[in-house]
Image (cartoon, rainbow, N blue to C red; front, side, top):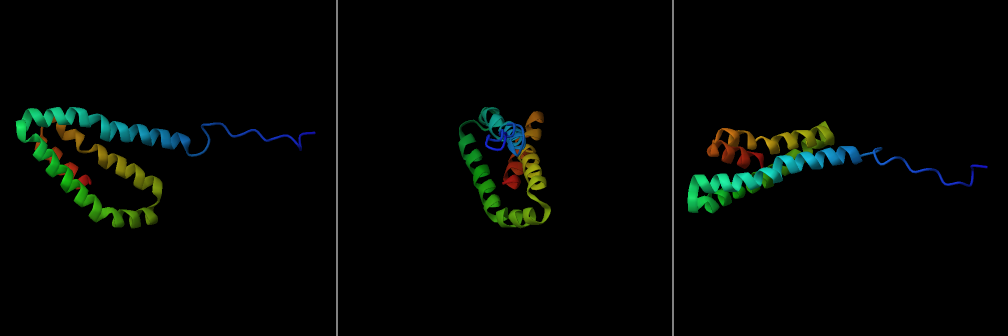
Length: 115
């Protein structure tokens, strides 16, 4: 009787989708949301030269990311993808902590080291 019928698909919450949704939310919270506040905070702190400062921080972060990506990939192969993804999400949110206290230089260093 049931042999010719199509099997029901698994529910949406089965598989990697819940993890992907949580990781996407955390990435948005850790990286994109603070950019709005960061830009205005840096502009208030540095004035006209804020674009130069932000550009220097972004350049340093890109150079660190370019340099460390092979090592992070190799470490991810040994440790596993999920622990490395969680560690990278935590590191991406770390630069936002000094901004709560108004420390722009600590933010810049953590952004540059975070890649």
